Image (cartoon, rainbow over all chains, first blue to last red; front, side, top):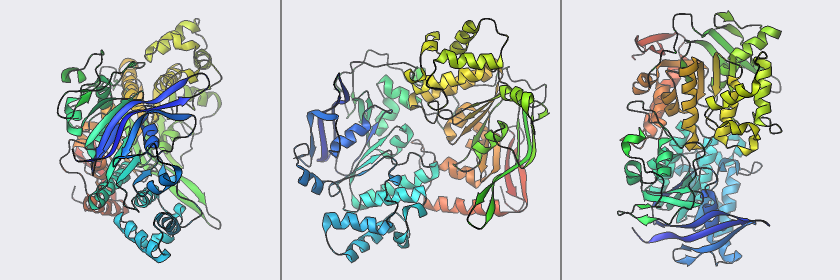
Length: 305
Length: 315
């Protein structure tokens, strides 16, 4: 793997209340290489968004990072002060939030919002910022004339593309996408993904891609980490994960998506109330495939169908 | 998964919809416009058949389910359920109809009253729909067992259950009415992915064991293929293509169906549909739907596969 852009080491995030602390992320480690698409998959509440917010240093009380390190280009993110953070965010790492299409300011024209982002971080004239905004809109195939539009005059898909273009405005080295296509129809979803790939080819940033949709994840990501209960239970290249997953939870997730082709076979998914507790640290099984050892029976391919 | 003996084709269809149309009025400041939501829908469902209605948001799939549930009144057309016309049903007749045709909603967090225990929720349904049952307790235990839960959940409150368990309770409540038809409107889209398949399997089992006819409304083609015998594709209020689920998705003919099928993420596919494919399909969809001479073209008699197209189109 190339030099990592982002390294997360043993990251632990706790939500602390008076009576007890809940671990939102528990000793999570992974690295993202330059220009790589790394996916984090798992169900609601497994800690995917907690990790994204921890990387951006956006966690608020009662969440606390109690252990671990986050390194961006070798720089310690956790020790940055507010001023450094402000300069670092968006310039180096940009994030597209869940349902980001609703995060545009409804009373300001799209163009103004672009200018605001660019001038706050980079300075320069309005004209130069506007020129950059036009280029960005063209990159996501929206008519630059739409810079004069208000958010409500655009469709959900268009707004989502604008938010992604805005995130790319300052050529960040890492883009965090938290469920970027949830609530969009399949055809629009396909268009957005294509746009993300094109932008990535052009600008060369790395992506941390977060979703619960395994088929989407497998299509887009180079490497994937599967999360459960705040821990990563399996980490492998996409192709390895698809055909040779070793952890029963990964298999259940994969088995929850019926195929569009081939014979119709009965799938089982995860039985109601199945719980994995005391998840061990990942073990290397070769070729970049890491699995948390488990007592639960691993399904063979035959049993899956 | 094969169709079992529960499917009874000796009597007429469970649901027969004929040239149903429905429009909504949108009121702008000075103009009142009629927006068609459903146009000229024909749909038949045999007893014990699972039919999936698929389409994008705004295609009219939920409106059709709501017309069947007496929640909307169609502008024109005829809906026969078990041979009886449902237009203008009122009072006792409407109540009887509603116990025969039950609806499962998308959001199990909103459809169960949070202030009551599960046992109360089910007891009310039983008291309404099966008042002569002697041992309600035994019947409730039977209901929750049917939906794959332990009778212990009867004393829980809805907030103590997971999304999947809650949706199962919603289905148990539907079963308390001994329905002949279930209308399931996106029953799994709010659930965690790993339990979705379990709820689909449960619906399948209800069809197999009780011969219940199911209309499955979804935007997810893969789950429609998994659960249903037949798929009807809705685009802008018209059924544009329909047929056996597997056949239809293996061999989609309408440009809209092809657009949808091509957009489903599929890691096994060699090449994905690109922008020029989509533009071409969109143009075709426009041309096909603008035609004033739309006819059903049968593609394969055995799998009931047909497509709605102009006569001049080569299909």
